[in-house]
Image 1 (cartoon, helix red, strand yellow):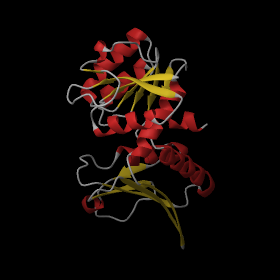
Image 2 (cartoon, rainbow, N blue to C red; image 1 turned 45 degrees about the horizontal axis):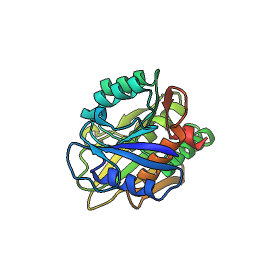
Image 3 (tube, rainbow, N blue to C red; image 1 turned 30 degrees about the vertical axis):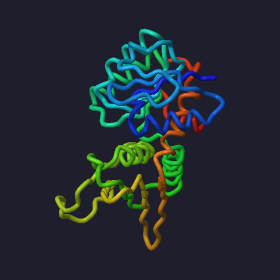
Image 4 (tube, rainbow, N blue to C red; image 1 turned 90 degrees about the vertical axis):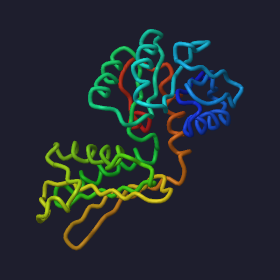
Length: 250
């Protein structure tokens, strides 16, 4: 039984994760960490990671980038694996996460959905088959409250594809500002915001007289919660290192 502590336990994702864990037999919520909100489960709720009543086997973080320093310090001090589902980190903060993975297991990905990460693997396979003969465009759609564009997932997909192509591509985010014919070495990214769209991503391979589209649509945030819990169970007992969903898929 993997004992999991949830950072951001009183937020929407934290509550969904707690509910998912409650339905499983391989894990249990041993504590929640949140500065705001009221206790809603049988597990204790504390304000700080340093107030945890017992050492968890893994911490799942869906909170805010500002919580990162305390999380990394606690996990390194206590040799606790960390699953990071929070987004919006700066390059400096990402470097801190990478550095921490030299001493503890860290699971870090832009998207916890198993399906999205499978989509990335399928896109890489498509590039291996199609080579450099098809134009590549990524279209992502999210709810009207999402602040960043393009999404971190769209960037993750682009980077997976670009790595397969020897990092020969550059990214175009706004064709209105460019005002020129499409460059062969581009990966275009378009963002749509509206309503309550959880998350949709299309990877378009446009060639001569044919188009191939790989798509993923998230119907609820539960897919991200399930992925995070799977990652936590996977990470328990692993050696120090930086892990991602590709490692879980394999």
